[in-house]
Length: 161
Image (cartoon, rainbow, N blue to C red; front, side, top):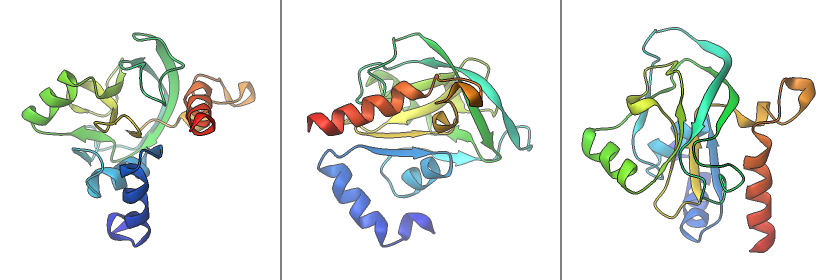
């Protein structure tokens, strides 16, 4: 339903113009349903809600969101989802891998996501969808700051635009 909301026309238009668009958790689901990102989010393989901090591997460190990370770096980011199992067909997965559009991968696949994918980018690199919650990892008082670089990079790219 959210993908068909009138506001999504504006989101799509802005994304096409290169404006950064970030979809976290349910926002990732909306971006896939709206066709801004390939794939779909399915029920976790365990059929259980998962709420804990998990290690992610940074796969792409060249997008406007991920430029503050090093490729191969491991970061700890909380997850909190029941429908976080990323699914796409083999051709789509091969294309995402070949084009460097996998942004983050689970080190320990907590939900059954195909190829351990935790986050993907659109072809232009300005749309990122991810199930983990980097906004919950921006303050030491909340358990860590591993998500902070993602937001700093997005802000920097907006300031440079």
